[in-house]
Length: 154
Image (tube, rainbow, N blue to C red):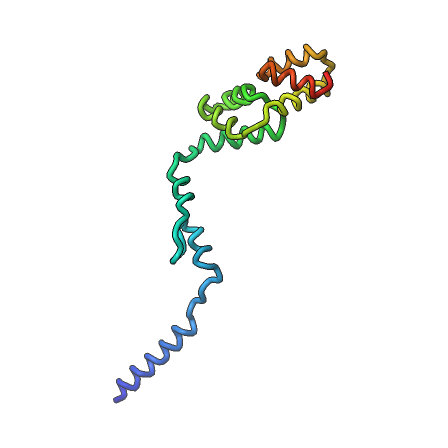
């Protein structure tokens, strides 16, 4: 009888202890937790468009680095497309990664030519043709170079 009473008391104490130490659920939703695990939440279907997008070729680490480097250069100064590709290649990126990084910027090269022309005119005096020649030397196309000169009043 003592054994049964002792076992019953032990079971009661354990049951109270376990319920008192219960770990509360986090306040995040199933969708929040699914985001962390990149899985759809229970009862939700995955986004088919996102699944198709994810199944395509992914950006390599070197491509991502080239893309970020190109963005940083364009934040710092105006570049022509070919000038920026040359700069990234000088930094050690492959031709393929440099082109990828530059093209990923979707830059307006005409605006870049105008900004570059403005930078040159702040440093020195140029004739219209002299500025166009300088911009072409920097890798802008003849059309971009002429636009850059025109936008700066030449």
